[in-house]
Each structure stands twice: as structure tokens, then as C-alpha cells.
Image (cartoon, rainbow, N blue to C red; front, side):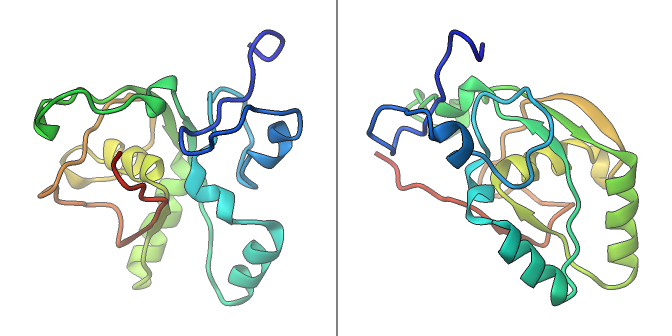
Length: 161
């Protein structure tokens, strides 16, 4: 894929990909190859911001999420409820589950960076109890969804076309 493909850019970036995008269009959180695109909410973080947040007591936990090609697909259904969400591979590890449990026990909050992180955490909590999970998710979060794993969300909401 790396030899024959090119860096996929979100539809709102209207220029052609270039060689610098391989480094520029990557988050500071990235560790494992497998995604076809970067989870864009994380692009706003750099090492200096992470350092400043840690200095204020913010702790970070990591999930592995392989953003799939379906992330670029538009809604094709007239009604949002009729849309079939694409699948993405996720891994919510035991260490993160324990970190979240400890944060909650201490009165802390869980703020997800990006909707794909939300999908990962909610998918790893069938019935509301967070547990380690590795596999695909096609969870589709619609208005009225009751979140069980997050207290807030930092995201790149995009205006509809």
C-alpha cells in the first residue's frame, strides 16, 4: 500500500497530496501502521501541547484505531437513520481500561480526542461496562445516543456539504 498508494487527505483539503503529507498528516499519538488516514482531531496536538497538558495534571491513555477508507464516504441515505456505518479496527487495551477505571474512581473525567476514539470506547463497553476489546466496530452514534464512557469530546466537526 505504501509503495503504490498515496496519502489520503480529507475531502475538505482540496490540493493533491505531496511527499510532506506523510509526516505532516500524522498525529503525535500514532504508533502502529494500519490506518488509511489520520484521526484528524489528534492533528491539533503536538509534543509541546502534550507537555503543557501533562504539567497541568492531564493524563493520556491510548487506543489503537485504524481509520478505514469508509471515513471518506458521504452519507448516501436520505435519512441519517438509514445510513450503514463503515467498520474500523480498534484495540482498547487492559491498561487503558484500568487507567479509566482509576480516573473515574478518583473523580476524574474522560475526554475523547475524536469521534473514532468515542466509537472505540463505546464499542468496548457493551452494556456500559468497559472491557478490553480488539476487533472491528461499526457502531453508529446518532442523536439520542446515551454515552457510557466519555464525559467530553474534542473533535473536528465538519459542516455538511
